[in-house]
Picture (cartoon, rainbow, N blue to C red):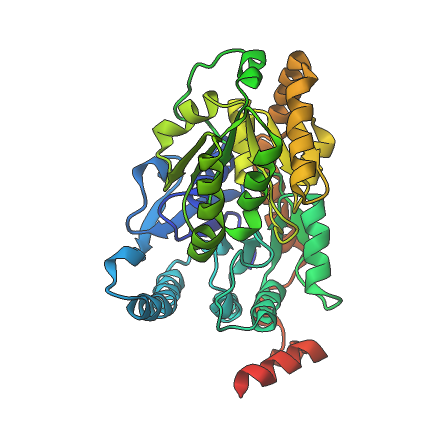
Length: 422
């Protein structure tokens, strides 16, 4: 299907947070200025926060909102509700989509792994293209009852059904290509993550003064592959430093069994630790970043993604101490906006923190911030995304025109399918 105008619908179910903000930033950049052949729309949750809406493109808040875990009487009820929510959500979206003749493609920012391949095929049968931004190659946390091999099989099947895949760095493109294996799959396009637009600016002292405070910030979701325990274990090697932990609790077992004991032990030893467990409201982010010396990203080898936090640090011009996990290394090889460490050890992290504080390179850091913010603009992201769309519409036949028996399975896929059928 080739139309004079191609209208792409962005599918982002979450009502707030990183994915909602990413979709808004990208859609705004793609819609302003107008892109001629291309139009864009957003489909999101019925409770989409007002701050993530825009007058630049149509917004359809039609997806059912997911209930908060705290509203359920027990874990079993919560699990049952989740298992019912996602199929109902996808079915409702497909019903709505079938009636939208103007839409020629859907760009998923989120998906349900076990449903995605089937959903993509149904969209193809409508004559529409399918795109997916691979924010995380594999889920940050696996359901305990589902084997990792099964989840990987779901992801590979869905990625092979897409017409275009988007990642944020060249390193993640290579990781995804290795993960998908030798079988043919959709082209993988590198779309750089943009620097977040600051909604509530805050005044802050000079960079030299902030570094002298020796105040370290861990910001973002608290789960094992974010390596918060590594930062806490490094604290013993950083006398005179304070640590603020501001993040939503995702992995409760990790937090209760590893993080809390470390925090209590360090506090008993006199280390200043400010623990803020929970979502940080938008108007509190800028003052939080302005009151610290550096943000710490001690992400582990299991982190196969790009970090939105590093682009928040760029927006607020806060130095970063980071591992090189996932796509982080690409950014730091291009711009020295702080210090990195390679070994996932408390010693390596502490050494990187001390190197940043001793650098005294305020002017150099300021220049690197300026260059990085210009390089990682949302207009750059928009152009790369649209180029991915154009390649799919120009070069690939509609997936629904392929014969049904064109989906051969590799031996590892057949093994997983047999296992799940038993």
